[in-house]
Image (cartoon, helix red, strand yellow):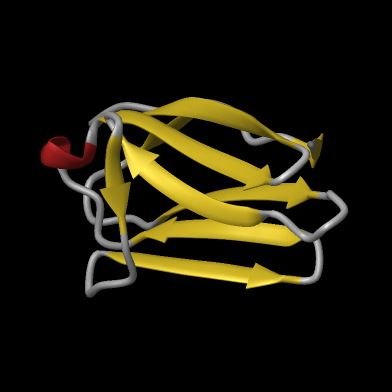
Length: 93
């Protein structure tokens, strides 16, 4: 399950977004990330880090096409849990 969850973000264009979460479970869960229910993998756009109980998704150089619902899913043989938040690219803060 999640010890801490991330929340909705509003980001200016060309800035980076960060979704941090703390995940725990025995056995250690597999952590997967999704944008609008489609899997995300490490790429030039996305960096996924999972160290200890901390899972982080970085979205680089945000633009309006990055708007959407971002989900972190943690699962092991005992069950699963997830958290999600909206990323909104805005021109005004």
